[in-house]
Length: 389
Image (cartoon, rainbow, N blue to C red; front, side):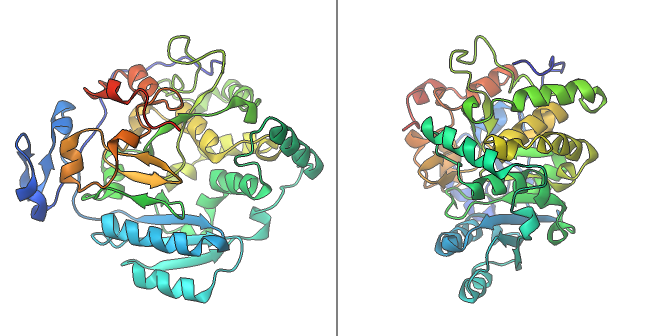
C-alpha cells in the first residue's frame, strides 16, 4: 500500500553523545572537547553535529500510564530515570492509572524523584468503549486474533490504552501546562547516562516526535488502517506537507518482504515528543477521522501504529528524531549505542550484542537510514543476526 509520494531534500541525522565536566578525564583519544564540558564522540563528528544543550529551560514532563499491579516495577523505573537523567534536570512526573494506587507507592515515588510527582485517575469515559463501537464485534475480533495466535495487546485494557495514548492523553487538564513529554513504561530502565536535556534538544532543533527503535508490525492486526489513512490523505491533501515521511511506512520492493506485508512502525516505548503537535489541528483531525471508524476496537490498532502513520504523513522527516545515544531495556528487549566510545563515555551497562536496533528481520532501522540517505554505522553488518529472539 503506497500512501503518498515523498518529495523532500537530503539531510543528515543529528546524532550525538555528551559528557559532563566530571567525565571528561575518562574520555578516550579521538574525541574533541567543546566549551562547557561537552565532548563530541567519533559518531558525532562523522555526522557533523553541533553540541546539544546541557541545562534545562524546557517545559517537559514524564508521563506514565500504569496498572495497580505495576507498583514496584514503577518504583524501580523512577530510580533508573532519576539516576541516569533526571537528577540533573528535576522534571515532573504525571502518573495516570485506571484504578486507585496505594498511598505508600505515592509517598515512595516522591522520595525517589527530584521533581514533583502527580497522580491522576483516568476518567471512565476515556477508558471504555466510545460511542458507536459495538462491544460484541470488538470481542469477536479478539477471538479471531487468538485463533491466529496473535495475543499480544489483545486484551480490552490494551485497546483502551492505545486509544487513550493516541488521542486523549495530550488534551487532559493534568498536562495543559506542559509542552514536551517523555512516555515511560513501568519496568523499563535507562542503561546509559543522558548528560544533556532531551526536552531542550527537541525544542532547540525543532523536533516534534522521536523514537529509539523501529520494528515491523503484523498487518493482520490492523488490515484497514492503511486504507483509512490513504482516504484521509485524499480527503485532506492540504494537511499533508510535500516533504513528508511516508516512504518509511510505504511498502518497498527492495527494503520490505512483500510476502509478509509487515509495515514498519516506531516503538512507542520511551517516546519523547511535542505535546503541542499532538494537540494540533492536523494531528487531532487525523485522530478523529481514524478513531471514528472504531479501528482501535474492531481491529487491533495500537498507539505505535497510529503515531507512526501520523508522524509520517503530517511531519517532514527532519522533525522526527532518532535518539541513537539512549540505552534502554524493557521486557527483554534492549537498545544500546553502537559505538564503543559512546558506551564508555555514557557509562552504559547495556549489551551491544543484544541490541535490537540493526537486525533487519523484525526491525526497520536499515530502511529508515536508506530512505533518508543516512550513513549506517561501520559495524552494522555485525548485528544482522542479533537482537531477535
